[in-house]
Length: 111
Image 1 (cartoon, one colour):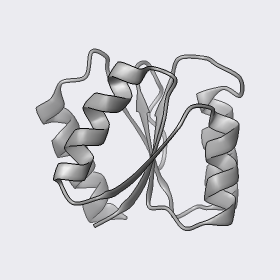
Image 2 (spheres, one colour):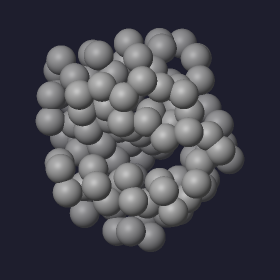
Image 3 (tube, helix red, strand yellow):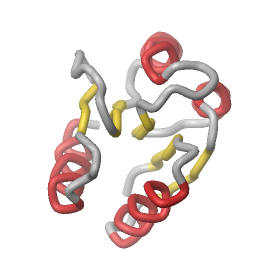
């Protein structure tokens, strides 16, 4: 069981991913803005940050860089277009739910 934050302003995306993750037994919190996700990660322990790559407020890339600096053990997954880097993976939208499950499973094994 992993502690996961989903960061997106897309309610349909949140509902889709939240249900899958809860069914897999993970503890999931949702948040709308990347800056709030960074603040949560700085104050509590999380294993995975799933962040929508659509720009709103602090960019997903900037939030990922901050998280990698303050909490290097947190795995990061961009939803939408995003560049895969060390400890940052990406899945395309629309999200293939089976592919998403496999990706989360792989991240859970690494974290």
